[in-house]
Image (cartoon, rainbow, N blue to C red; front, side, top):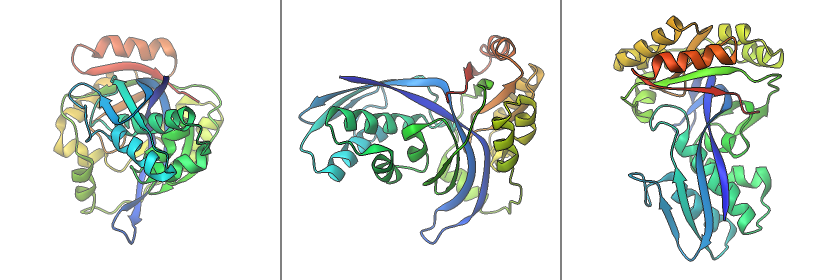
Length: 276
């Protein structure tokens, strides 16, 4: 059996840059894995099974990842997958994608496929836009549908308080709403410089997400989350993914942990730091 950490991600920047011929939206986003994670245990089996509480079964993206792995490699095998969830569902933190990426890594090792990052990313792209990045995680600028990954340097870990309301946002709905707007702001270069310099203040100034106003208008609770983070001393706050989760960057670990303590009675709130 292999147990993998499935790390959540934050979109430190997210800009919608257009529509692709296949109908998908093209993006420019700086993504960062953080210490908030699920635990994914995978063992060999004759069939594919996923145990994940109410999310168990064939609709789980981890199940689809296993099936895609065996279809791609031609290996005659199966996987018994057990997931301990900690990452909020439908919050923009990439929990399902992280679980799928963890399954791909585990199966590659268990079955000796030796696909490497490039091979795993080819399978990952068939599962979702975030999955290729989450195969390796760390810090990266991702473009297109997420398949173009340029690794970035994060000189020192940043400290976050991750916050989410009870209400989750549908990715499909958020992208449909985004078609009503035009977007122009791109902050990825500024964010990359801030991370390379290890400057949380500059990183906070560079935060940007095109979905922020859309999500706020549909889910006022996200506005409350962002305001609460600022009240707790965040240097800057932003939505992650298409929401409804958000996060604040803090100057130091103690400040981020204090924010968690202050907010956890009203929202889902947890301290996290960069995983590079």
